[in-house]
Length: 416
Image (tube, rainbow, N blue to C red; front, side, top):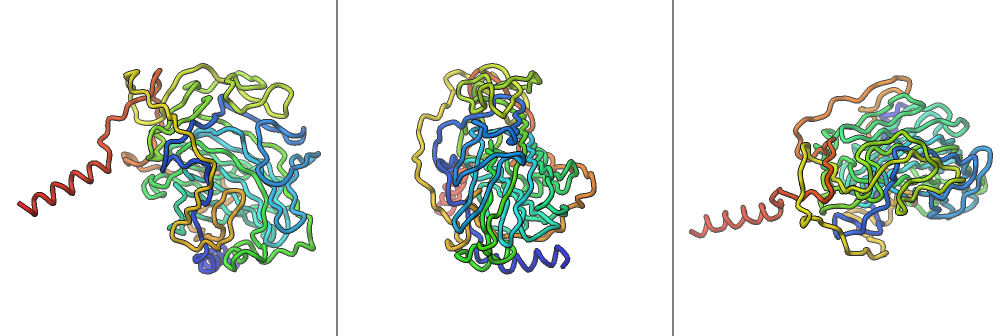
């Protein structure tokens, strides 16, 4: 069946079941959150064939290690082993060498996700031996269904492939074995409004989208109902390399906008270093001590900076806006206007089954390059980095106050 027909059919089946993100420990769009641990180095590589790495946290189930690397196994209903990095990175590259799990309804996931629910995904279905899904979300928004595409890949359940996300302020590229299979620009993501642009963690995991308890739309998207008598279902990850374009000990949201311009780098270097080291220099960084299976490129010093508008600024020290409020660890169960009975991807927390047209994907055999981006879009993230010893103060008039002012002027005009 042609991919566009398949996508349309799955979309029709899944539309009623898509839900918004159901969990984040602290959503900076809604409240003031503590800073996130950053990757304080330009590059970190984890070789899972050498065993467990302290740079990663197990968030569900258990993981074993062997010659094929990290082994994620579903043995029975309810299993969904998942790991995530103990740090965030802010633009850069995430490269995962993975062999997806076979099995009808089994989903192998590679997920980049931020606190404000920006997300970039790979999803491999165990019953599909020729395709893999690419997807993205901005601010947890699932109100449109034109984000997912299916791209060609050869035998993902029996062959290791390298799946890469190249994430910059200008574009996001999905690559398989070095070949670009999809490119997204801010202009294609509601002119940047829903373009992923805030610091992200990397999550890896396996789950049963075809579990009989899931809604019909999720099961259909996953390729059918999972037969647990065929278990175990195994996904392998040999290695992961993360390149961080903005190394820092911590990242802090300067406001509730969810814009790249608002992100402050704390204790990091404004430029990447190529020096090699076995651990990051900051005590607050989540990179490992020597002797682990991860290696990092060292980065420097302790300055605070903001990735955002071009030009430089000398900030008033009194303008430093350090977030002091702490988050509550409760889940924010805010399903935005959709059925709460949908099957949830336990790796990302997002509802499954909102696939869409593949019209803007490219062939996996090509080596396509990034398409042009829209210039001058107010909501598109900027490439330049403004560095100072303190936070860069905001000079813009808050949009909500501007709207209120306009409303009051209109009311006065009508009355008088």
